[in-house]
Image (cartoon, rainbow, N blue to C red; front, side):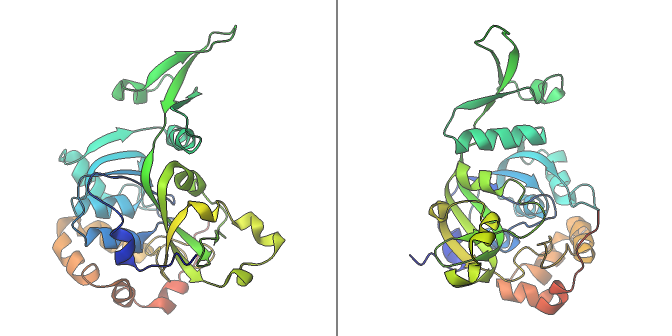
Amino acid sequence: MDKTMNHQEAVDQLSDGMTVGVGGWGARRKPMSLIRAICQSDLKDLTIVSYGGPDVGLLCAHQKVKKLIFGFVSLDLIPLDSHFRKARQNKEIEVMELDEGMVQWGLRAAAMRLPFLPTRVGIGTDVLKNNPEIKFISSPYSDEESLVAMPAIKLDVSLLHVNKSDKKGNTQIYGPDPFFDEMFARAADKTFISCEELVETDNLGGKEAAIYNRFERSLVSGIVHSLGGAHPTSCAPNYGFDLEHLKIYSAAVKSFGDYSQNFLQGSAEEYIDAVGGHKKIQNIPLPQF
């Protein structure tokens, strides 16, 4: 089955009020071309679930977010996304701020089709004070330990960016860390992928390459070929995050109209041209930690 589509066709599968999970981590391997396509759409009142980066900031700047469920919103070397900060300080969005492990546990519960998973994560923190809807549960065994019952974070849709995919939805992630993308895929009713390379199945490699395939193709509803689609975030080993552009983006909180006019009005390819072209992106060095 050929699952390829363009950005518009993918966004057309979304509707107002959906809960949308965004893969990646901070300024790393975010499906930014899909995020920009959402920003150009009429979608509204979305609940976004993310280990956030500029995906969250852009959606907030375009007033697409009703509620944010998150572990953090960071641009790595720029500690806090300014557009998210503005939206939160102005009380433009509802927030459910969680420990990073609690987000992962909530996605895992949804992936396993469970109502919750027990955990010690969050005990003794203000996370539970600020989210009174999260309940405790007593162990049914002799220890009777009181544990956090982390509720499932069920997603209508997840959006992920990968290094390589075929038309059937067999994907590969080559970076040093797949983050929790497989949990986003498993927790969602539908998953839409953007990929750096769209290849024939035979070009995905043999059995030794299976380690790069983090989730089944049956979970993938659509694939968008988007070379440079994670920019300005990184997509290891293809390119690093564009710190120069992230600084421009961050400073644009004072005059977002200019940033939008320069970078967000055209197609995905026009965006790539506006930021310097594919060659410039591919030459951005990977960050060293």
